[in-house]
Amino acid sequence: MAQVPSNMLPLGTIAPKFNLLDTKSGEKLALENIQGEKVTVVMFICNHCPFVIHVNETLVSLANDYANSGVKFVAISSNDVLKYPQDGPDAMKNHAIKEKYPFPYLYDESQEVAKAYDAACTPDFYVFNGDLKLTYRGQLDDSRPGNDISLTGDDLRNAIDVVLENKKNTLRQKPSIGCNIKWK
Image (cartoon, rainbow, N blue to C red; front, side, top):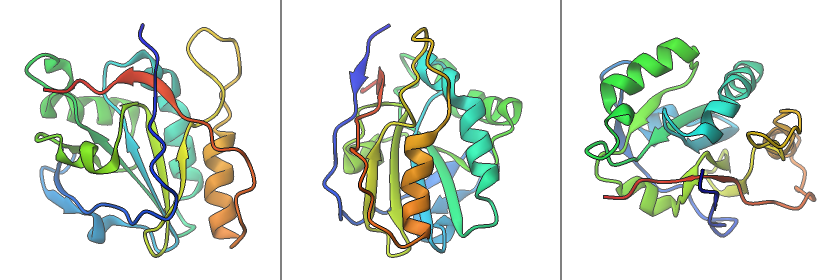
């Protein structure tokens, strides 16, 4: 299993806009219509990556923990579905239902959104404040499939909490590690 690190988009970057198909509802959703009042977490994931499968339960738990805090989560899959049909929109919808995703699961068919975010791997995490300025990019936590480190979500949780508390993030931001995005 290849381990690709995420790119570290410069802090302060304004969240690139998007208008993508939500595979759960069948509707197109724009960033400005689904962003959080205080925090927006954008996650690049897919159905088949072992690194994403490893963290799915924690992602659902985090999104539910912050549901009433002005924080919104959104997941995007940008994989080439011709080579990886298991990541296509119908499979995404079924996966989102099975995993009980409490957030939209968007399909980036053109891969333009992944390129705009400089996303490199799945999972890849971005935290934006209420003004949609990037405050964090990187890993969920230090756990990876097979490394025997417990999943906590601590890095991402801290990144959200410091924005909610209007504090500066003083922890080192580590790149995420995962499967590469399957480019066309």
